[in-house]
Image 1 (cartoon, rainbow, N blue to C red):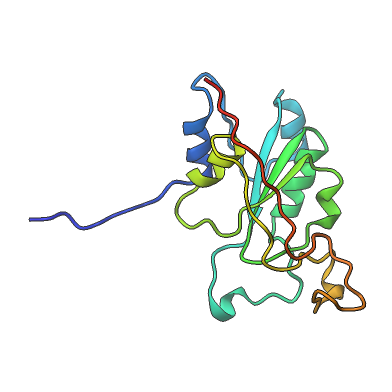
Image 2 (tube, rainbow, N blue to C red):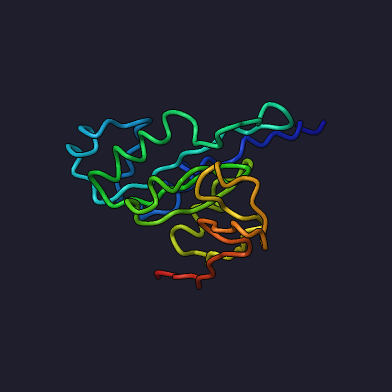
Length: 170
């Protein structure tokens, strides 16, 4: 008798815990207050925010913002610590109000069940590679926006991307 196939996947949090040195204290706090962040004596933060998985009409959005509590979480952290913000979304979302205050932005899109891929590039086991398959707008008032439009002034242009080499620490 065969066992039924079951795959729960790996969350980004679990992947981070698996990837960092075992002596590293990884602290998880959902929607931390600025007081909590300031009092925690943390070295830096990885903030994961974004959209819930969706298909068809369930993902419709007129404002394309990161759902609550994402924006407040980003602010509470960057006001106190250096931070990397990982945005999980199926499309560009409004990020410009935070961009100048964060130290790095990772557009992870909707990574499915395997958060280990995010940790792999975040910690340098693999390099970042990728080019935007669409334009990332500054604000929704710019939409629709297409390459070649007279008003084309994106936050990140179509084809923008970053390529890094792996950093392997032995």
